[in-house]
Image (tube, rainbow, N blue to C red; front, side, top):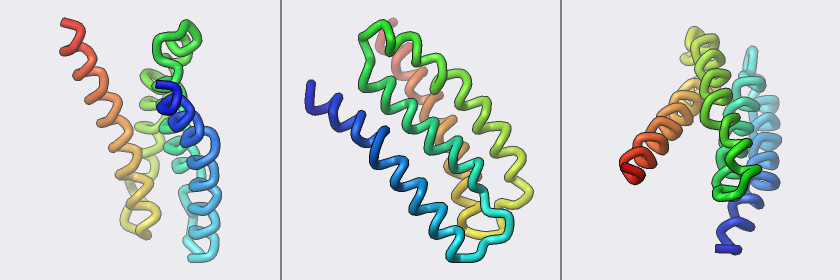
Length: 120
């Protein structure tokens, strides 16, 4: 169990920020007009928050922090996805930003449904 926690925290605190910086660099080098930096920031942050909450599951701080990736992050990502929708055909980065936002909301919905089925 300890290795899983360390792996989830390493992904959330090191791999995802490095991935975000590399993605921003790729968008900059591709000279994308109006690159979706903010939307990807929300998506990477939400996935990072989800991984941190998964790593801290069962602890009081994990229960408190779970409000962020379950309630607040999907709302921010949905709003951002609806804003970026009109640009989602501009580039592959815009399309990926739009679909990754919807994928995060689908992931959270699936996790909630699965956990509610397990508990009942």
